[in-house]
Image 1 (cartoon, rainbow, N blue to C red):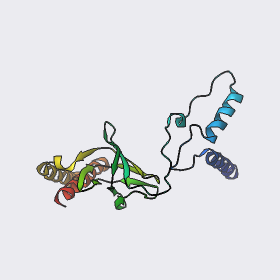
Image 2: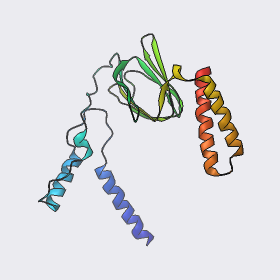
Image 3: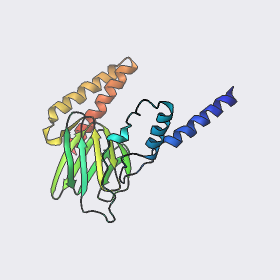
Image 4: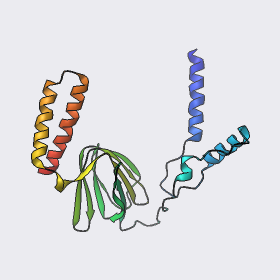
Length: 203
């Protein structure tokens, strides 16, 4: 039975790899080879129904990777409910990645980084705008575009230090008195976020 299971798993993995889209930061074609094969297979199976559109049909092509490194980094910074920066050309961004603070300049290698609670700095000449982000992801493309998606974000100068200290004290107390795993996890998240807020304000 296990021999049959391994054969099925191998077959499934091979099929998945065949349909997997390669990672690339260059132009996205309007229709990929995988989508063409899907449409062809659909037409053979159900000739009387038009094949449905796949996600790539709704994607707009990105600018191609330039032959030389541009002078600016183009940043898109979005939240679930708003767009903080859209196509903003800046000199550098520093993101709070889970592996540490990561500076992104024009020409940076393609990277995907998970964000932890911390300060996101946007550098434009002598101006530096700082945001506190609670978490998210940053997608850095080799064509000097960076897409930053955060769950929550607020300009650093709008944060009240007194409320941060109050929240840190409350969640620390909750953590010490928590009796269930859920209560401990919730309290620990509160302590981590408020500790990061406090460090951002004092550092």
